[in-house]
Amino acid sequence: MFQRSSLRALKALNSAGFLKTHAQQRSFSSLPKLIQQLRKSTGAPMMECKKALGEVDNDYEKATEWLRKNGQSKAASKVAGREASEGMVGIAFSSNEASIVRVSSETDFASRSSDFTKLVGVVADGALVNDSVDGIFDVKINDEKTIKDVFDDAILSIRENLQIASAEKIVASSPNSILAGYVHGKVSKEDEAGTSAAIVELVNNDSKLSDYEIIEIGKKLAMHIVAAKPTYLDPEDVPCDIVEKEKQLLLEQMDDSGKPANILERIVTGRMRKYYEGVCLTEQDHMLEEGNPKVSKFLGDHGLKLEAFKSNYIQ
Image 1: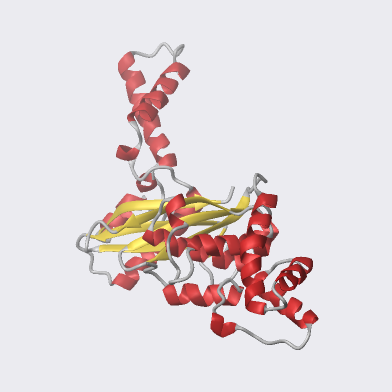
Image 2: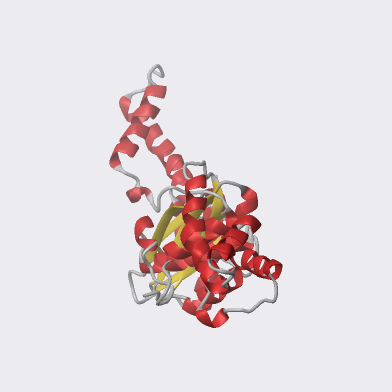
């Protein structure tokens, strides 16, 4: 079952018109009013709403269900295969987990809609339960709906090819872990969805700072990650084949230098340090801390260790 932010997710979905129950049935005095309300609640085109009501003798609840069954498959078949290169990145947190997801859309206009950003939030919450792209769809929002149902409703409403492009999470590795994150380019203050985001896990080794202060440090580090876009946590995290390829490239660049092998080795070592500063988070100068100290030194001076990070961007 859905274990994180259930109430918030349900409220968001209700406001977006994605959840309807029998208790929400309404009576309307005329067909135009029924069509108007059905269109508002489902996002389906006017003629489809009219057709749905005609199929079920103007019964609002049955028309809503008819649209879900018939309109979703029709909408999905129309948009399937179309390029979805826009979208939003979202994050979510539980007591000991943090997730980051990227949901793709066809256009920037659609990705900035309220319906879409709420959908990203629901997917991020689902990733706390199951962070495989396929598995998220099976996560239950309530006894009646899964995230797959919500996703199909969003496609019906937005009329674009929507996809869960990626989903990851960090599970706290220690009782002393603090999870934090940052979202850049948010459309609204209410939704944790934007054009890029990062999440981090900091471990309190012997820090005198409060949890709140550590979270603030984590947020600043996540902001740095979004700006600097590191690929690896630290030099030990870089795969051996990548390291060797980089060293070989540097040696080839100095083939005609005539320098002794021991000198070349020193030069390569120095240049590899520069390479690590470009791709490894711990080796970078912290953009958001005073004096721009190296990330690893700044955290160490505050009794903290960077255990993990994950980031994502809309290209």
